[in-house]
Length: 238
Length: 368
Image 1: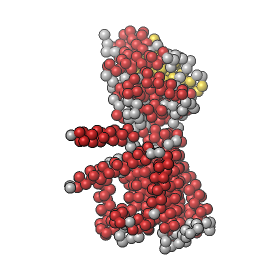
Image 2: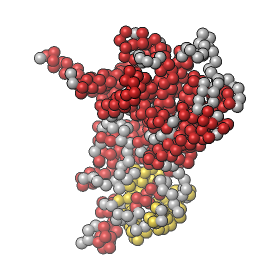
Image 3: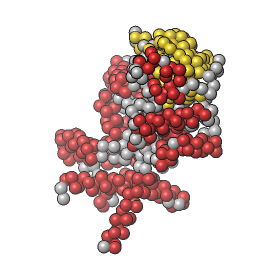
Image 4: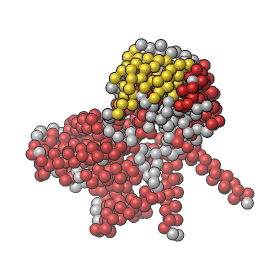
């Protein structure tokens, strides 16, 4: 088991956003958390990556307790997040952004880095065209690609993707999701948070449905896609 | 020619100046270094600039000694702007109480060389720098968890706390301040006296040059990259593995050390300090210097510090309206160059693109 989250509780002031969320991610899987606005998806993600502190529960990565470990140290263990709303560095060029992804790597000046750069460019050919352009001048889809590419540059064992389809055109969404599958097939475990439940469930091995800070359903992605309750709640019924 | 045309001309020449660095960077090594050496040499000749025909008319400060202005104002403001630029420009932390560190540097020299001990100036300086640095860490540790406006307000309070404490503590000289502060030791023909300001200027300029080299190395290192990331997006930086708090604290400490260093130069020159030398207004002027020059650009900080230090003296001819004229000048610069005189990044690509465009335009004219 790569990631084990047990009974996670997180609060903003007095309001509890997560009321005991538990889930696991196995090596090699794509696991997705789906749910409506305010279900606690992004909070879960930010807690796994270390940006939010917990009031209860635990997070284990490869058996090691990382519940109270600062974010930047989790990157060294191999947990890297592509943040919601893209969160790229707008005043840095595409190349500099990708470089930041290698910040914690000891071999950040070696050929291995160039290899990874090539791999990212192969996944996202648009980034190659834009390599010297400022991050802030990219389109929304390109910024999303850059954020994912930058996270990949750290060679994560577990890639956290927070709403990668947010604000993108349908055609781009399909493209981003097929790239996520490709990244996974190359050996990276993916934890995916999505509002676009249909796409996410189709791609994921397993899924958890969140509702107001609780896990209400879990199962294989495809099964949940056919579940009448899930369909009614997230996929527009019928 | 209308006013706006004049300003367009001015901004164009400013663009040309800011592209100059790139062009010098492209020169072969030998010519590059001789150009830099020549430039530094001409800076050491600054006290004699008013005697140069056109330049003299432009820079001279009628009514006050130019030598005094560049020593007491320009050198100090440039050094302070360099330090504050690390905090505000590189790490993106708005510090409105920077005068506090400047005061700490000056007061440590005052205490150790006059008020409570008789140490030589040169011994006081490293102690003062370290004390300022520690003050930076002490202020930073609790407050750097705050962001944006909140940090600005807390640092503003810090500057005031330092000044008011100095005013009320008898062992710091109270409101009377500290006098008979030690001066820098004579170095060969350079005699640090009362009448001749030049030795102090040479000393200050040397300190600035060393600071610039030190900061340049820092900016291009892993530390500089981390600051860049923190300023651009703190959460994203943390998610890329940058220990953001540690690097913010470093920016604060290094900035504080340079501010304190400027304070020691000031105390060694004027040899008398009291709390009214360190008002809140000075913090604001320091910020103005950094923003005017171009936040985040070291050369911008140098130019901004020099302009903010020098300009009010240049306008002494306007008598009691000089501060008003200074204000109008600042507003005009910010209207026409909102990124500051030398913006953060002059991208090589952009400069090359402009160059190519000019080339092709020139070609068309030739053909036509």
